[in-house]
Length: 246
Image (tube, rainbow, N blue to C red; front, top):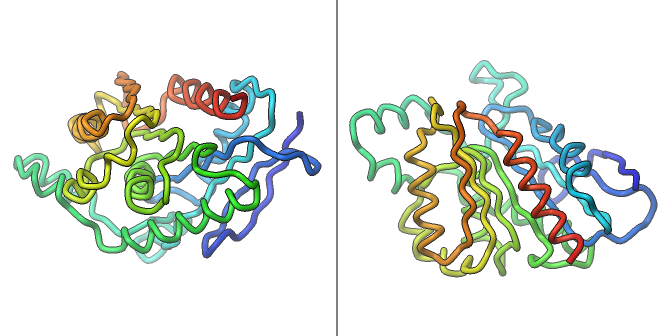
């Protein structure tokens, strides 16, 4: 089975779409959201590993949207963001023990980002004649937070699988109120013990919220920094395979 990558605008976002050659119908969709400051195609390199490891009987479509905000004015000409944030402010709050401030923060711009990502997902699912039960939604760092926000407060139904790499708990009141809709969803989380940007504790808070909501959480705690370990990619591929081959 061969795949091709193309650039498309879905909703209001520029995306890289990896799909099978020809007109073969796909049986599952994976949407992957990059982190703050990365280029819009930062996670596209995962596609070859996912497709190789997934052992697919049926084809899938992988979508990599670029965040809407340019960070050129902040000295990152190729950097994109889902919403603007201050990493230093987050770290200072953690160091000072102001954990409630971190957990309860509702970033300016998260509503717009959620709506734009929801438009992308809705467009792809309509095209493939699928619904959320065929969706794997994933994100790294800020993209992981947006994935939780969208799963809880954007989509009509929860995704079948949620993959969160180096994410953190924010918007605690809003997510706690809505997270029950995710009950039964499969969640893969990974977080490095030496993460200098979003400390492991922030990921543990998120795991607790999702577990309390009834999600089936697979948590990978690894010796590493703010990154995606290959073990997480392998397990993501396994989830994709389960969806596609169901």
